Each structure stands twice: as C-alpha cells, then as structure tokens.
Length: 492
Length: 95
Image (cartoon, rainbow over all chains, first blue to last red; front, side):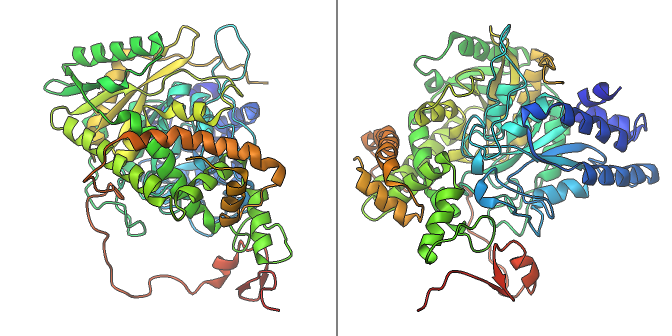
C-alpha cells in the first residue's frame, strides 16, 4: 500500500485525499518510509518528519471540516535554497553552517497556506552552482536511474539534483527547485521528471538565497505536466517583497491543458543543432516535432543567431552577480565564522574555508570581470550579448508561439566524469538562453536513450505565457506516454 | 587576456577569500580556461547595442517612504556566530 501511495501523481494524490481514500498522515508516512529507505541517494540534506506529520494531521482536520486548501496534505520536497522558518537552511554550503531562518520565503509561504506538507530540504549544488549535484557540502546526490546492465552511479543533474532525484524515486509527490541557467530543466531531463522555469518576475524570489538575481526563478519539479500546472498556480504571483516580481494576473494553468495545438506554430531553432550532437538527441527532437504536428501544430524552422554566445555571456553575468551577492557571507551575521587576528583575516579565513571549489572559482571570475579596467571588456559586453540573445527570441516569437529544443546535449553522465569546469558548463547549452532572455521554459520526458536513461524535450515560450508552454508540454507528454520508472535498487 | 598566479592572489584578496599560495597556479589555469572560453564574445560587433540589465520591462515600483518592518533585534541576531547584547561582534578594529 505504501509504495502504491508514493507512486501517485500530485493530482491523483489530491483526488485520493479529497475522496478520503487515504489520509494525509498515511500519505506522509508512506513518503517518510520511502525517504528512510533511500538515504543512499542523499536526496535530502534535512528531513523534517515531525513537522511533516504535524502538518499532515492538521491537513486531515481541514480535509474533514471542508476547509482544505488547493494543496492540502500533499507532501513536498523543498530545495535547500529556500528560507524555511525554524528549519536549517544551508544552500548546501559550509558557510551557512547552522543557519536557521527567522522568516519564510514567499513561495513556500504560499505552499503552506494551501495546505502542503514539507518532508524536508532537498540537496543541491552549493549556492545552486553546478550541473551535477557534485558540488554539495553535504555530499553528491545519486541519480535513481542507472544505465542498462550497469551499476555505476550517475549524477541527477543540477543544481536542483536532490529535488529531481526525490521526485523520480517517489520520495515526495513533487518538489520545488530553482533555475538560474537550467537548474530545474536539466535535472528534470536527467531523471525523467517534469520541470518548469517560469518567466522572470512570475514568482517571488523573496527568501530564496540569491546567486544570480537577474537570472533565477523558482519553479516546480513534478511527475506530470498537470502537477506542474497545479503547483505553478500556487506559487506564481506578485509579491511586494520582491520588486522584480511582476503584478500581472495568474491564469488557471490546469485549464490551459487541452493538448490541442491546432493553429499554433512551433519553432525549431536551427542554431541548436550543435556540432557533435548525439544522433539520439536529434532523433528525439525530431520525434517531438512530429508529436506536435500530430497535435495540430505547424512546425517551422526559426533562427536564434546569437545562441552560441549564450554560455560565455552567462559565465560572465552569473559569476559577476554571484560575487556581489555572496559578499554578505562574512562570518558576522550568520553561519560559519573562522577566527583571524584581525577583521580582514577573519573574513578571509571564513570565506576561504566556507566556500567550495566551484563557488570560489565563480566568485574569483566575477570579481575579476567587475574589477577596474575589465568591467567594460567583460561585463558590459556580456550584457550587450544578452540584449542580442533576448532580441533573437523577440524576433522569433513574432512568427511562432513556442520553441521546441532538446533540454540537454546528453543523458545523465557518471559521477566524476566532468572534472573540467567548461565541460560541465556545456551541459547548459540549450537551457541558459531562456534565463538570459527571462522566458518561461520547461522540460518534459521524451523517452529513454539506448542505454536506458531518460531524455527530455524543452519548450520555450513567450514572456508570461506559461499556460502556452504547459499546453505544448502536455501535448508532448500525452504523445510520449513516458511511464518508465527507475528500478528501486536503492531500497535496502 | 590571461591572468598569472599573482593576479589571482590579488583578486582573491579583493574577494576576501584566503587561498594558499600552493593553490594559485592551478587556480590561475582554471580561471584562464574560463576567460579563454568567454573570449569568443570579443568577436561580436556590439556597436550601438544597449546593455541588458533587466528583462523586466518596467521601472522599479516606488512605495511610500514609511517603516513597514523592523524592531526585532532578536530575529536579526538569532543567527549571529557571536554577539554582545544587541550587537554583532567582530575582532577588534581600533587599537
């Protein structure tokens, strides 16, 4: 019974709870049991079983009294980048040792208001910097998926790797991630799950530990497109605490899911056919275009001529913002303090020991490109390229309603396989453009590679057209009928 | 453009991150790898292109200049590694 409960989608679990087929406490217990049996995956940094059971009992009372919220009793994993009041929040960094926020992020506040239950804080790459979840102070996350006939550990992608692994292994009904350059979509693709990065400004960033403020957004990671629509509806909306959140109405995203694409035009960006792209990625991309045609869409080629400059522009803009945002970790107000003989040495010791290798690398790059004499050559130039990349999309969206691309240039890779930072960065080649342009984009599982690993298709839409993106995703989901699950080898 | 270990040491100082001297050559190689990677941006003609600083096409909202929050030193200080009464503490900065 327990494993049947944890296999339900969010929409199915919600229906079961409302029909009182099982209680929120039963559902929560089933997940807590699954989490305990899956500790080897290291998907959670902090489990909060007592809080979860308490919240579930309160949900059962509201379900009984008819006062249930839209997410009543649904157990979620929350990426450890969201500040959660009274619960350790680490950003997977040593430098936030012991940090227990005295306030709650806006989007998690929305979830709890709707009755959702927190199971724990999901593992991630330190400060959301990484594409493999190997950069966590709390150890790497293991992908629930393995290659056919092979027991080698694969990465779940990153930076929201713990959230993705938890959804794929049925260790939560759904999860929250964040996406700065692909950190929701790439791990979703690597784990056969659904993930959507909303338009920049659609969700509040208040209470999300900042990495690159002009690029990042909160978003759901789920088992189905319908679940993503439900969860996005709960977290989207204007927040006076975030001046970049935009006061526009939030539509009913589930109502948009018709799968009917008649009259819609879908663009295939020719520049995304990159050198050395595996034939398999190309094959599923073609398949995706065929599925959308079958759903009634017209598929046309579009050009995004500055695409190849997206990654280098990103690796200037994001580290520059990171070096500024992470200046707050000084050993004075929160987290780790390593003593020194004077104030400067205390700062240097704290930051020297508190940051991991990738975070340190990005702070150094960011500091360098912002330093006197280099600012214009690097930072201003990268911002100009960012304008050209955003303009490319604007032009394309004059003729098409959405864009279809692969999510990643490969399936999940092995732990330790990408030791070179540049090789790791290239994994974001298809996802980073949507962050630079601030556009909504989602990943939907397409099928399995020859090695038996999930591959994702990406839909990029017009600003604030999450509804359109979700509907294209829904059409892909229906046609793909992806229902493969990893074998539960991790259960002791 | 490329950096030498002495430049990395200077940048690390600016960023207030202690780096052992022994690590500097390897770190310089990594930084140079990334600088080399982003070098391709120099080949694009960006004449007349305005830098994009925000994708939100509206000016930042203003609100009335009134106190909306605060007055809670215990919450502010709750995570301090060290404190004295209602203050954060730092190593002595004045002799």
